[in-house]
Length: 179
Image (cartoon, rainbow, N blue to C red; front, side):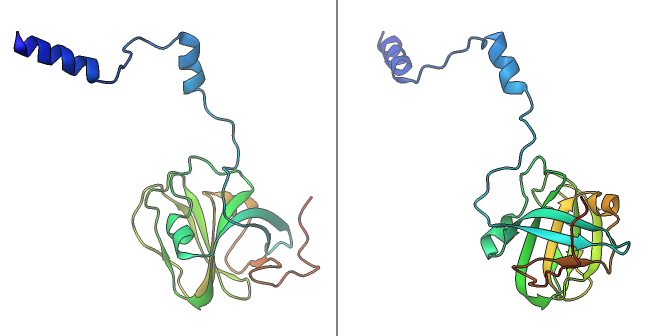
């Protein structure tokens, strides 16, 4: 009898959890894909212009990771990235860098940028969750991450230039965006 009372008292103190199936409409609402949107981020944003070797310019809207914490987190756990968006990792000092894709869920292009804005290396389509080191192949002050395949899709190549008015501070009148 004591065991039965103890069991009954224990059950009464446990939180109530419904085992019933949720309504059908609720199931559909929860499983629907969220709309494609840029996630809300506390990071500063700037527009970069990348001028390719054919003379075309492409504007990329980037979040700026300029401190250790935001650089360590980067684009981890993002499920999507707008086609004209990316992340600028700004270091400020020029030295060799290594990146990886730990906890990154989408393929990315990595553009390694010198202080004058020159892209010295592009690592295309870095694979999600790959923890292999991706080297810059020389000293850089910044790395830009774009959707995997975006650099090739825009015709961006090593030797092309990145312009902005805040970080590289090299924006010129010749770097105008393609309409």
